[in-house]
Length: 509
Image (cartoon, rainbow, N blue to C red; front, top):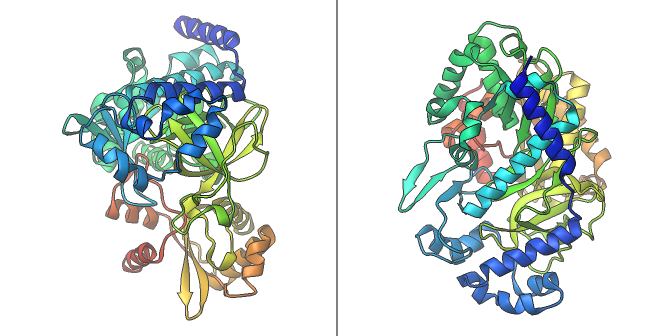
């Protein structure tokens, strides 16, 4: 009998039952007030007169009328550059011990301050997700199994008086002592900087571990599982980890990977989505009856939402200065919104770059629908990442294949434009490019009336090509690195796209 597992399970169920879900509107009002109070004596708080904002009856109204939107470039140049150089009390009290480095797939690499308060919020969110397992009635044995977390290296780089690394590496570096009993691949392997070598070591050690849960970005988790299967000469991952029950996805939507994941599992497992970004832990899946995530409205992040439409987005994907933001009580279901956050690490009215939709307003449940920089609006096509992923899933059904990655760019041809698509497939079947482009075009016209109108004007016939999916990952490795938080950009600018096409043409698979 799993005595320790039984004790842990009962403790989780008890804690889950006694925790009250906060009223989202009231929780958000308190979060904003607490953020303003704590940061009122910082340079940022003094510049934007947080004390005056706190004296108003409506903190939100005073806040948005005083503080402008910030994208990364704006807040870094004006504020975080000083934080990075070690100056205290700039956008948040004190000096951060850590800086999270973004993958830089949609822009140049970013350095984002990670405060002690933010680390506490991340731990609290993790605990909340663990407590949500009470909803799934897991067997006591599960709570004695090990958890394999595949993120970036925990070998953080010392710069001046702080440490730098990707947020997954920082989170693993700060794992509580009690959790290290369950944590795999362990400190030695997780510190290996070379992703291929780290995965090789995981594959070697895999038979020694009893893994019950996985955590990481779907594309890299899938590649890791395939390496484990290949190295140990097994048919599916459950042959070596028979007690694998839960996979915690993160960073991007899991939907495009569902089909390919099923092929490397011996049986179905529970998949829980999370929304952990370099700027904070925004949402996690808490309800077994839903595949949506619950926004964490009482965990140090204040949310605003800007409707995703052309007039609200600049050409570089940032929010237009005059765009109207709304609060959590004003949102509508099934409408795409740009997420704006203010955090306990000193991000203020910060555009994180993601778009979401509410699937259940009452329970503040959301799904990530894409990135603002993946909003393709050349000559009015208004294609969101959600449209693109939906089209890929339809192509998968029509051709009975798996499209694991894709990218697209708007290419100018004379006075007109075309969309040129590359799709990554793991099999080597030949699909006629003209037929593929025509079918994709028809799907997108049915999905999006704006795209359909654009196709009658300056947006001409698209081009599409199927390539081995490994070329996407090889390109990522060649220009930055594998694993961690790194993701393939769904939409590229022409110069980046040219680099990608040159790479593909030199390495035809």
